[in-house]
Image 1: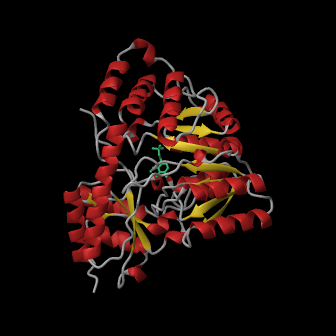
Image 2 (image 1 turned 30 degrees about the vertical axis):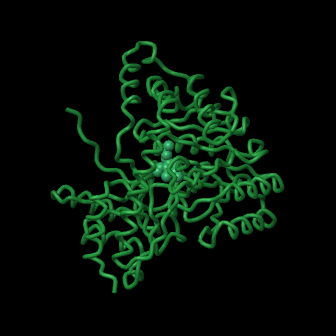
Image 3 (image 1 turned 45 degrees about the vertical axis):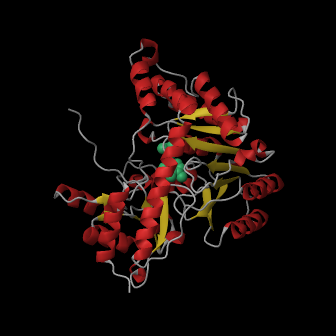
Length: 413
Ligand SMILES: Cc1ncc(COP(=O)(O)O)c(C=O)c1O
């Protein structure tokens, strides 16, 4: 019997308490205090007491990986040559199939030899790319609120991060970034983007990427685009790849993951693609840190990329129906929510008369009174205050139940 692991919470779980052990390095002191301690402790306590907590806190897919992929893993795991160390950048066939996937999906041509690298999930690729490209004195810009690693990847690498608010929309974001590139010294080296966006679920059109690539060329910065939700799209919306912009590969890489679109979060496999210099640097640093992903996982991923596009679309439709179910329910309960066109999240404004409580307190009370776990917007930076991020990781019945419990606990006039 294998033990069930304890519940996890997003990447936020890796943030720290204020008192660090004396052995901690200086860089550990640059990481923020643990904002979610109370929420996690309470969730654990409620669960241990036998309560049925509906967990919409973390973007952890709850549906299964396509069966053909699991079957391929089982078959490949038994083959002796797959049990050895693999290659750090990923086997050639995997990189080639990822390139073909990009070509079919986005019309983007990638050379599997030097423009594609496999990573142990996209977050690992992103973090090591930060270490390979950033150091003390470097400046990074990223929209806020932010998925934590987009700030703390650069911070761990020693860089300074300047958050640029996304709350006034993409045009304002572009204007502010342009202005900062003229005024900030030293000039920003890397701009980190993430559309469809976590936590706000905002989406962009290709025109936005065209403008930011122009800015990158004009001001001499590089772009790293986290495309984790590129395959989780609704209502006919198609999320553009940044690499669709002509000339993007000269200045940009994109990180892609099997975790979300293909329900392979636990498998730990993703990719960094695009600019060959950045891909090369990432490969070089990874060569020191790891011996590659379990080869059987890589082989099974080839099957996912080749044969599971229909599963990917079907999964997106499941999220779309859940989005409608949650948004309909919250609207009936008196909340005003925007329906996202992509991602696994609804970014919901805390309604009056509960807004003054703040998002962390609301999330704690939501657990205590409604037994529903949600992520407080403040956990994604100050610009997330006043909002909750609700993950669509339970079925429609459970989402309806969650809304009923929230409605009862937090009546809106
Ligand atoms: C925006 C974003 N990037 C990256 C990740 C991590 O993806 P992976 O499982 O590929 O490391 C997540 C997971 O929640 C995410 O929301």
